[in-house]
Length: 133
Length: 133
DNA sequence: GCTTGAGTTTACGTTAACGTAATAGTAAGT
DNA sequence: ACTTACTATTACGTTAACGTAAACTCAAGC
Image (cartoon, rainbow over all chains, first blue to last red; front, side):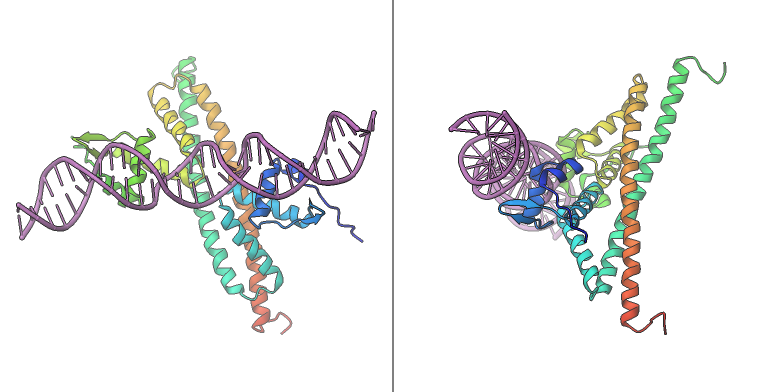
């Protein structure tokens, strides 16, 4: 069972809103390894999942080289986790980075809220909605 | 009062752990405008603050062009906020982006926690600390 | 007077992550 | 047979954000 439905390159490009070139580039970089039917690429659900991880990694500012590391770690963890201790260390490093990044984002978000407050005040003042009125 | 202490380029490079070249590049791009004493650059606290904002922007994945926009907005807001409505709109857009980014980070962080759990379990199993024991 | 140290300008080099042709094969529809 | 749609490979081009090297100034210290 589970006839493993396959995807074409344009399927994935459409689904994730990226170009064909991007997908081919990721294959070229060894991030995904689609099957071939003749010359044509055919992608499994696994490829799709990896692509999703790649794009999420990009969104949080990781380089492709780092994403490759992480994908490798996923494989490693799935296989035997023979070097689980090393993996744990790498994970905690990454976690620290991400937490710092989130702190930065939070800081910027608070500043934005403050700025918004200033703006609203200025606008209210200019439009006569003064507190003294 | 407030004799406005000045910083040299190496002061800032050391403080923020960046190269001289980077600072000169930011000036070249119009992100900071240090005074000159002869040819030498001299930086005020204001320059320092802007540099800090620039680096924070970089850490959350903004391009220099976007950072420049934001710095401009800060100036604009400080001046009169004549176009405060437009500013508000831009701020809310940026906020949305940042919140999405934070969601991505949170997602990755949870996945890491799960992976860590798997690793610990594998390690425990391999070292004999089995739950059935 | 010479070296050392910190600063300067100018300008070509580099890396990542694709963009953008140009050219060609292949299957389906008419 | 011809067009259209989708795919492929090859390969040069592009942008951002600096790196790096060369050549120079200028004040301080010995």
